Length: 56
Image (cartoon, rainbow, N blue to C red):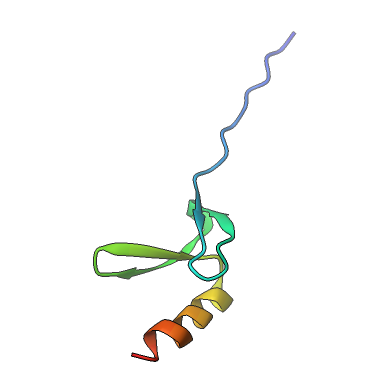
């Protein structure tokens, strides 16, 4: 009988806008200072940018 090899789930991070869990390897990120923010896609990045960056 053959043993089944389990592949571990990828490391997941939370999108900064919608908080959905996304694999770290698939996350888009913006680096600011000493930290990295993750976004699940361009839509969430644009929402974050409109509310957080453009209003400064």
